[in-house]
Length: 550
Image 1 (cartoon, rainbow, N blue to C red):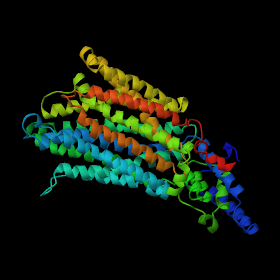
Image 2: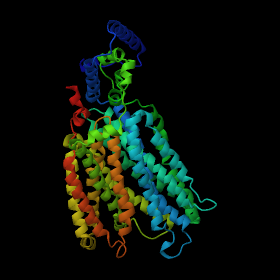
Image 3: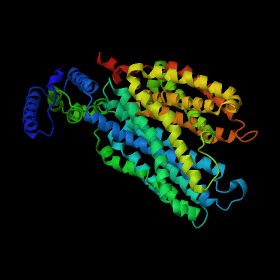
Image 4: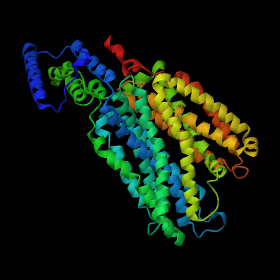
């Protein structure tokens, strides 16, 4: 193998490119003239090792930054869309229930609000499973961008939702758009995670994937900032007639498509990952060329891509992953326990992650960002309050993980997160009223700490580990299964526990729900034992694919 000093020249340097291609093709001609048989398995294996080593040991460069930005903008858009519906649902209450009586006035009914928000999570379950499988079956590149197109179309479509002449209300139309939107958002999880993981260097892989996921925090804050700007722009119109809020929620929702539109071209033009090209398509020629033109490989790798252009016989050996193969792989306990661990821990985390936000209205009221007033001032205070909450706990948690995960390790951070959350939820659950009665500030601190350790903890690590721990043939499918398990937990929290919180009176059951969340943190802690530590290991070492090279 060549040293790092023999790095590839710029592929745009045509003089070097033409001369090296002439030499490489001449070698290829001599090779084929001298041997009529296919390339030996030892030669192909050597090239595979060399190509993967180039990816794993490459210097962190512009392509890695670009990959993180392209994938991260998708997650920015995902979280913007998911969070924006919380604000839009509030605003819609002032538009469509302005003439209701009593407590129902200016408020979207609880069940409608619940289903509008839950529809996206239901769609996510389907999208995560389907796109996870398709990414393994068809290739990462072939479907990367399709999920973003779905998100863009449904975001714009939802912003134009309205009542039909007969039958369907604006909420039903919005439910349909949001459900399909969820399929696109769900598809973004496995595909973006796997592409980032398979292009990343071993040294920085954790930070790269964490940075992609951390863009969710910026998306949440951006949705609140946009809502403040749009509300301020319509202040005079809203004060004159609150029905003008109908424009506000549509603009807030529709603007969520803008970052997706910006990222779409780059997603559609990103190359296939070298690992998929090598291990599934068996095309060392294309893999080496992709490494050369993106990450930058060795001079030897550039020559090998001409020497090892696959023959018809080689192409015939290409086999896409099948469910039968999947079954035989995961019927072994050592393989199944990892998938079980990633799925159950993500499920347990999301039950509490989405459930604990039932307390957000209490927190907003405690810090003075909730209360009665004009529609404009109520909505403005709610948006500003959510920015404060996310800046206190959510964003710091994400980015502390980015900067520490390749030092501390994924499993360590996940253990820390589950242990701290277990303690915090026990305190909040069993001393809920005592804390609120004696120190609202103390309650806010505990709530903020919970948000911090969810993100500097299992909310991030449950996303990262499934993108690393499985073989290339099943990596995306397994990430999709793990993510879908998490979203099932989210649906249980949003559609199930949400209806329990007022059992026995307004917010009366919340302490018991937090106690239940503590139990789920214990479950997550136990099943983390089945999850491997992925820090500092190549993807082949983690999935034991390297065994076939021996």
